[in-house]
Image (cartoon, rainbow, N blue to C red):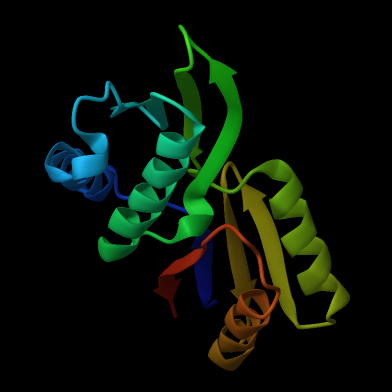
Length: 161
């Protein structure tokens, strides 16, 4: 019985390379000379330290640009609340979305079942398994899920006949 998995993964080495390129660019830019702005990654969280809100906004643009150059979609970035640090400096945590959370998984299952396609969708941890009798049905589901306009990037892998 044909099946495939719907997952949401981010390659961390690509994120590390994007952050290294961003740090290199910040060290060469005139507007960042003499500032204490920096960016670092701990597991699935990027921490941005900036001198003020303007530099924070510039760092957001740099981050999105460098991630896009590495093929990482902007939907994986989840900005948290900005925290005040010493003086005018600010700190912000940026979560990198990994896996499909329960609410999104339930929404996708509900939408696919509501479309009356002849497939079964099962939630398996942080991914979805779609099975059907025909390969064409599965390809139809892939197109349907892509058309849902979900902000978080999804990958379709492990396609088996």
